[in-house]
Image (cartoon, rainbow, N blue to C red):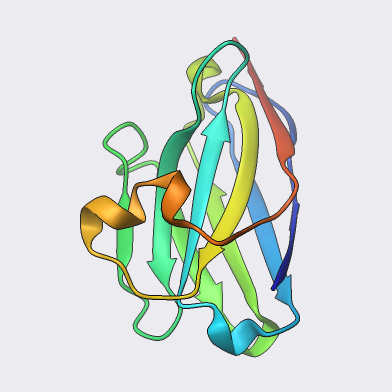
Length: 126
């Protein structure tokens, strides 16, 4: 499975951005799609995940209520709508996919994902 993330950019605090992650290849083996982010000098952090078939979602507490993940299976694309952005949301955002379902704690663990796309930079100015 190949993943291509896009949609990053520079936005002022309080603004919005929508990221996309397009999957190609053996997309039928993609069960869960996750978004992670990594800020300079910090560890990679789970943001959100969505089950491809059911649409069940998982969010980190830091983005719950501000970010929304959705999927369009016909387009093999997952979206991350980010609203009310804060400077602390500044990071490189990457998408990843698992070839199996996951329990909640597994969905949060980046090392449980099998394929990763390149990241897209999101910068939120104050």
